[in-house]
Length: 411
Image (tube, rainbow, N blue to C red; front, top):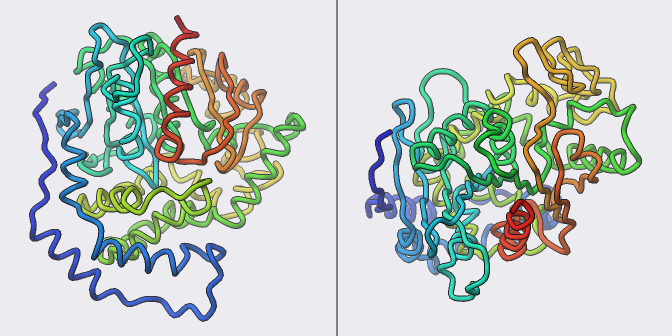
C-alpha cells in the first residue's frame, strides 16, 4: 500500500469564492421564529453566517488541523485520507476512530491528543494509544469509489486495509452513527484483528432486524422513541436515500444551505451545541471537499435502498408489520438478515468481539443493554450523564474515559 504525507492547504481563491457566496445569501421568508421546530433555527443560521464572514478564520483552523500527522493511502486505486498519530509511549495499542454523518474526521479533533497522551493533562499512568482517524470513502479528502456501491461493509474493508497497511494486526475500533455501522462490519469481517468494539449507539439499521413481538419493556420504550424521532426528524434519511442528487444541487452551491442541512442535526441531538468554530469547521470540510453528494452514498447505496425505502414509508417506524423486504418487524428475508440464523454465505447477525456501548441521553434513542446483547458480546455498558449523538465532539473526555476503561477491562 502506498502512503504519502498530506497537508491541508486550501487555495485562497476557494476561500474568496466562499465569502462571495456568503455575501449573496438569500434568506428564507420565515414569518414567525419557531426555534428548531421546523429545522435549523433562522436566528442561529444568521449568527453562524455572520461569524463565518467576520469572525471565523479558516487559516487558524487549518493550522490547528495540520498539527496532526495526515496521510493519504492508496486503497483499491483510490485516495483515502486519515490522521495517524503515534502515542507518546512506544508499544501502545492502536485504536481506529470512525465518524458518521453529518460529521467528519473532525468529530475526533478534541480526543486525539488525549488518547495519544500529547495533551498535558494526561497523567503518566493513564493509557495511551496510537490513533487512526480516516475520512470514510466519499467524505472530506477521501475519494469516492467510481464503481460499485458504497456501504458499511465496503467501507469496513477499506479501513481494515488501511490499518493493515499501517502495520496494525490488532486494534480497538470505535464508532458512532455510520461510523458504528462500519465499525461493526470491521469486527464482523475481521474478528481476529479487532480486540474490542466500542460504540456510542447500536447501529441504526439493526433496528429492522428485530421481531418487536419478542421485545422487552425497555426495548419497546426504545422503539417508541425511535418511531417518534422518525416522524419528527427522520425525513432526511428518506430524502438522502431516494433523491440525493436533487438535494445536492442546492447544498453544493450554497454554503449557508449546506450549513443549515448539517447543523440541524446538532441542534436536536446535542445537550450543548458545539462552538460556532467547531460547527463551521465541520461544514468547511464538506464544502471544501465538495463531498455532500458523495457522503450521501451510504444512505442511497449502503443498504441496497432498503433503509431508504423503509424511512420513506410505514415500514420505517412501524410496530412490526413490516414490508416484504424483511427490513421491519423481524420476520426477515431469505437472505438471513434477521433472527441471527445467518444466510447461505455465512453471514451472522451476532458479532462475538468484546463490545462496549456508551449511551448518551440526547442521542436518537437510549437502547437498553438487552437490545445491544442481541447483536454483540457486551462486556461494558455505560449510561452517560450528558451528551448527545456527536459525543466525541460534545463530550470528548467522557468518550476518552470510557475508551480507557474498556481497554483496561480487556487487559
